[in-house]
Each structure stands twice: as structure tokens, then as C-alpha cells.
Image (tube, rainbow, N blue to C red):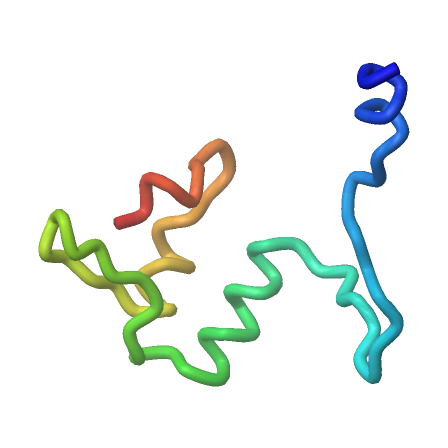
Length: 71
């Protein structure tokens, strides 16, 4: 019975709200963020003592790269 409940879950959950979901890729969202906040800090790794801007993040993200490896 537990297995049936797990397989019937939705892949995402959305409630009714004022703004609809955006049908954009991560790359498209980064492009928008660069337009808006280009040189502001986007990601911070306290453990590594490193931070990158939205522009740097967009430039580092490419085909086959994971977001976890951009810092």
C-alpha cells in the first residue's frame, strides 16, 4: 500500500496564487537574474569562503555542468 501512495505523488505541487508558474529553464532564469542583478552576489559558500555573482554563475553554467559545482 505504501508503494502505491509513493508512485501516485505529483512531481511538483502548486497552489492557486496571483502569479502563474514560469515555464523557464535554469539558464533562462539566470539570464533574467543577470539582467536585473548582474554584479550582485548570487551564491555564497561559507565553508569555502567563496562567493560568485549572478554574471559569474551564468558564465560558469554550461551544458553538462551541475549547479552544485559552480562555486
